[in-house]
Length: 367
Ligand code: SF4
Figure 1 (tube, rainbow, N blue to C red):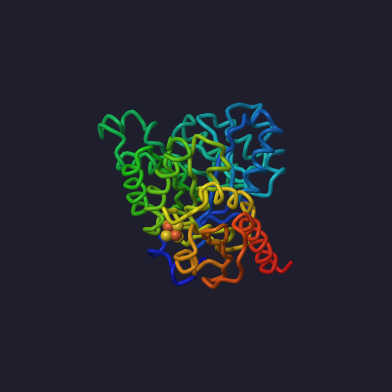
Figure 2 (figure 1 turned 90 degrees about the horizontal axis):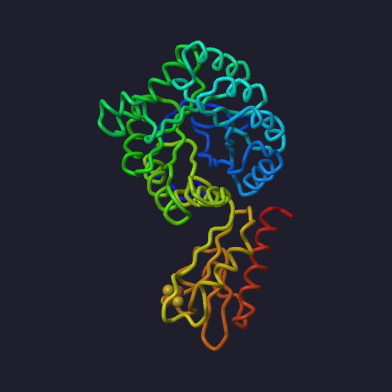
């Protein structure tokens, strides 16, 4: 878990200026948080509330919803009240909608000051946000840079992205507004990494990391893990979003795994399982999937191992709190911290493991 020798941070964290999204602290020395975005039509109030609740239950720290029109804005108050995690309004171009979202009680707004029609409107939005203590995220996207920057750099270069971010930032700073968070997303991982590295040197605002249009579950998870993971390993990044063309609950799960794998978050089950090989006599892939499913809502920190053979399994997984190893002749072992505690028939092993994990979790949560 966090703080253990093996999971010491890889580098010192960049000192960013802290902000607050409702109760959630972002930046400074606050833990790196996981965000997601609802895929529902925000005009469908109940569907959006249901999805935001699912995301919250999955461990999401903040959820963003699209606000394309007044009907969507009308639902923001109810959506924000229906969950305990901060709700962030995503607005493009329309400053009226930004004002309405702020009034409705969202915890944050994502809007680019340069795209809302002039400094006077920026002033109004900045004033309203300041009154309510709401931060604004500037979201630069490599795919939608200002034409003039694109022409000057010839392509969505990291320098062009940072220059764009700085322009938006200045418009808010000119209004004495500093509760700012910035993202510089690109779908190309090296571009995104370079843009964030440059941004980290250029200003001290909190950074929201993401690879945009990353793709489906497998490709998007890999791209996000590489891009976001590299930056976090360098100490850059305060909050993350894994963008997937998938159920947003998957985004949250991947985001949490990403942070856990860098020792930046703890809690929940860490499943260690061997890749299996010719020594394994059972269908371990489906068995492991069933075990993962059965234990997916475990919230306490617990390390669980599923190993394919009794010769190597217990020893290789001695770090696990509890584990099983399949053997030949329909037997299997249940072990704790590498020590065998009981033998089971192979077909009882899965159930025995799940029961053991549940009892460890109960013990740890003091129930
Ligand atoms: Fe193969 Fe056993 Fe290692 Fe699994 S634990 S990969 S079955 S040797």
